[in-house]
Length: 113
Length: 113
Image (cartoon, rainbow over all chains, first blue to last red; front, side, top):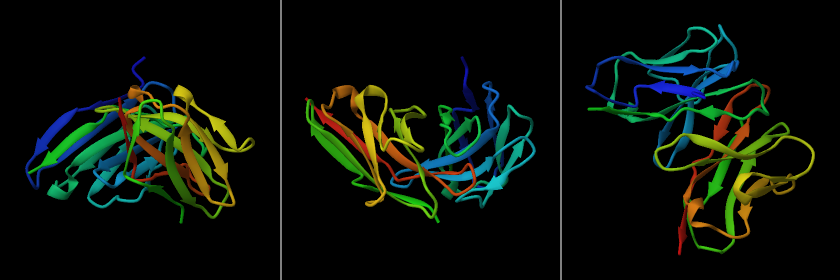
């Protein structure tokens, strides 16, 4: 029962470097999400994908790009990392629909120096 | 726009005491409301949700929440706190006609022996 798998778990970047956070789910879910968690600010939605082939901006999309590679995988890319992007990133998935619960991965702790 | 306000970033209770975590929402359409819990170094897990029907909803681990439309509230309660309840709790609202889930800033619950 893997559920939602995120890689890597930890990453340190220098300002200006790029990287891609990977997320995969094995529950045949339609919707996938990327959130960032910062102290005192809760979870903020970066991007989400309601179904394969579609993506939409969330609350804080600037500085990020996403790819819904197929139904299972949803990646988050930082093209030019900035210290303000230091955060814990969570991927989540759901069957689809407003009333469905989200299943979360265990998170990626990213530090940008 | 939909939003969630959690009153109190930290709540401390003694073991066996009542737990009350407050959540107020703003929504232009009938809301779907959720409480999630996050244990240290883990992703979030669903505690309970309100979609339609009965306004008092019961969740896992003895938690329950009551949807009060007139007060735009969805407070989380548990009659008797246990040490294992120490965690961070997030209220969330599902927005409009999309699958976006907007989270509050979280309440950290401490339980003292």
